Length: 318
Image (tube, helix red, strand yellow):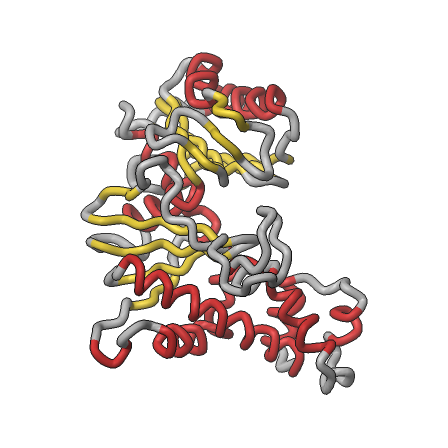
């Protein structure tokens, strides 16, 4: 067993497909990792976390555990009200169940909040005062932080930008609504952006065209094609960037942050779309010519941010 000054904590990032765990030290450094498929049964999901912690405790002196997930939590982060891609829901007391099963302090947190905390403590948002973490991946997640505190709202669900309706009657969203921002400015929306462009003609000669019209292309394929200069790929990314900029303008108008830190998997290709997105944001901010605009930055911790952040939050329980 390895013991380290300041204690080690484990941070879980539970996705709908995969679950990752990292042993993190007091300096925010990852010293060990585990990854497995996410179980789709509530008891099996809990057991996977318990077993993973037990495995890690053989090699490391673990003091606390943090669990980050995409879903609605209560303001005290005790219960999971609903997680669209996980088996936990209906106010299940997940934090208490895990703490009892593991025998260690457990911190439960929303995945965007966990990633934001990671960036605030160890990444791009260090020493920021009023700022927003805007995660663009499969969907859209966001966190508002002010003077070192996460703002949760009255019921624990703030802020929710991904499912604001931007096109009434538009693309169908997995949330059950239509026209959500997430369906126009997320990684998965890139496919729809490409289909829209392809069906309007003029791109049949592009290498990406057949994969798009046959619905075999992924968001990664479209980004890669755009980077290679494919005209259809570039057009799809341009459409995505315009919508992302409109979303960032909403963030600026509603919350007035000094900085917006762009995270999530899509941010890894920010050089392809960020200038256009910032321009679109400036075009859509209310009174843009008469007010400061938020600085747009890219996250530094990448996919590790959620694990590092929730592990650090768990350390606060010690």
